[in-house]
Length: 451
Image (cartoon, rainbow, N blue to C red; front, side, top):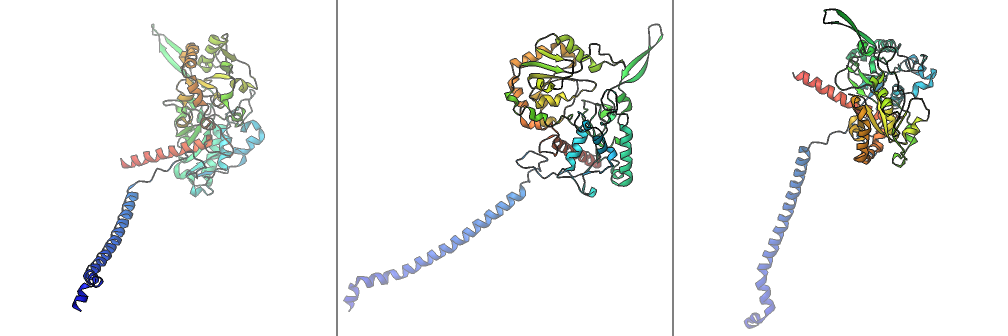
């Protein structure tokens, strides 16, 4: 039997391998347990790392009225006062020009804000308060231009009403209230300057000479005291200090009917056979009855210098279809009048004609969006005599670059007051500027508090 046992190879392999097989199963089991534990540790480490990364990374800044594929929910809450019709609606009913002329931004903004998604239904929820008073709609003058003789009294009446019926004006002394001042010199409410300052000059013989010097009536009157703490939306803007912008303000474009933007939907396809264009008031003898030189004589110099130059299409008479002439032009001259701005600025951009701005120190609307240096030319008033040379140089160098920038639909839309408001249009840009203004004002308040 011993021989039989020793000679059976199956029994020998079974008895020899039994203890080693048990050890292998034991090791495999331990490895499985360790692998599971390591996997759990790895998952826990990954989750902890992700949490720490997200908590340490600051959120992106909130975009304020930035373009997107869909209209963003507005952040600015504006309460629109429902004033009696004599402050606004009656003016439009009396004369349709009130809603369409170059000062009609006051009407367009009012109507756009009434339909604005960020309009506050309750004044307690408002960030700002809009006071809709139409001061540029009194077409009672013989020349057909709106009179401003009633403007200060009408605005004062509206402020008295708001102050008496609600607490919000008194709470901030009007600092969070917004008004539109779309006339020549903004809230100075005067179309021209005509203030006589008397200077006494001593001559060589100690003789007293009396010199009369013309200054601005607008400067003499200034902004009404009750508006100086409020926010003004005004077409007037110049570099440096000026009494007609001694209040927080946003420079806005003059009103041009939105349908003008549709007259030439593809400006790059227009046939432009006019080199330089201007149609408007150009006085041969520019000295006004007041003694003031209209346009600082710039328009007269244009007529004298280029009136017979075939490259310049200069016309003094009115023509209802003048925009068709602008649409045919390479350059549209935009000289100052009484004020530095004019609707030609907007019309030129909408019709794809490069604006040639001749108005020293002018401040233009929405500079961060329009990038005026990229879409226009600015020529100093003293350099009118060199204008042809300047324009020829542009044609020879960077004309196509300027035109490409100018024809950008984003820039054209930013100058149009649509009703209702559309993303990126002039009202939308105003709201964006108001947010920036409020943010700046809050920073000033915090800094003054820290001091």
